[in-house]
Amino acid sequence: EVQLVESGGGLVQPEGSLTLSCAASGFTFSSYTMNWVRQAPGKGLEWVAYISSSGSNIYYRDSLKGRFTISRDNAHNSLYLQMTSLRDEDTAVYYCAVPLTYSSGLDYWGQGTLVTVAS
Amino acid sequence: EIVLTQSPGTLSLSPGERATLSCRASQSVTSTYLDWYQQKPGQAPRLLIHGASSRATGIPDRFSGSGSGTDFTLTISRLEPEDFAVYYCQYFGSSPLYSFGPGTKLESK
Image 1 (cartoon, each protein chain N blue to C red):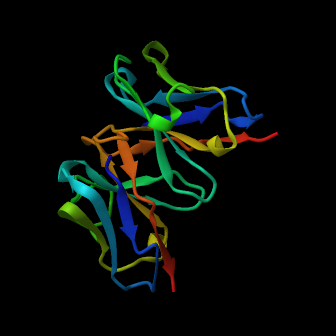
Image 2: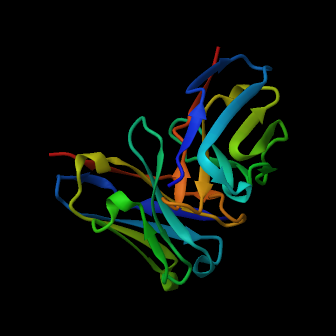
């Protein structure tokens, strides 16, 4: 069974930092691209970052470049998102998601981890 | 940059009725990379349709997708109580890499 389990969310002050993790199981993690997608409270979905299976190709939402860093550890089936200089508008549920079966559709998602940026 | 718009913002229908949700892209896109998701409160999104018209695994056949170019449609032929949710279209492969529409809320009348 495919499972994606996010962790690391919580309350952080503005300008603070946080690292999210996503533990993957049930598939060959090292063979698949991975993504972070976020959703602010009561708002829609917003793609954050993408990393290729080997980690050699990385893409970010333009507005987040320089503050967020996506990485992966294929030996430990884990995906990460380092977030720095956090702002109020970064408050959201952060999901990891994988296009496991199809060319683009994100068919497996974690349950999400809530990041709250507030003083 | 591909911008997706969805209409209507909210759709009020009754169980058993047909729902038609629209997604329009700011420029012509490749159908292969146009997908639809359903999201219920407190849950992660669920992939419904990939490649504009193919149902994802386990999705009931009352859900169908169509369209090409800039105009795409998600149709739910006969609404079941569990279909009331928010629906998003999404395009992969442009800038940003994944673009999501703002969503259509399908509510029970």
